[in-house]
Length: 99
Image (cartoon, rainbow, N blue to C red; front, top):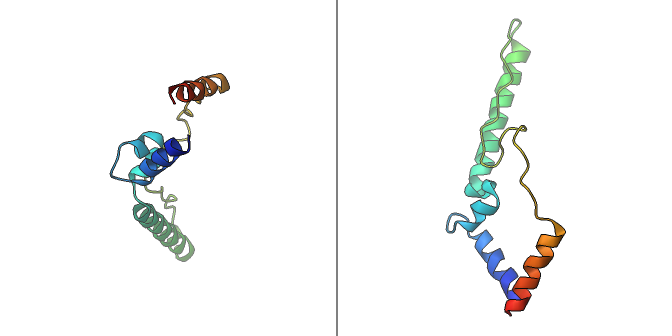
């Protein structure tokens, strides 16, 4: 079991080099640096909007929308279905039977 855990953990950490990580979590399609750059861009947009609002008498500029990010869809999207405890137990029993 430990070896399986280590192998899967290693595959998840190989961003951009394997298809497992994005299949598990779509946010992993972007590296950390790209997420940081998107946060910086959103912060700059917000600060520019606040500056315009504070220094303009008749500014009715809308609040800027954040940049779209992978895995951060609309709130209306449904949550993924999770396996039941019986399905998880069966999976691990099947794995254990193979060893």
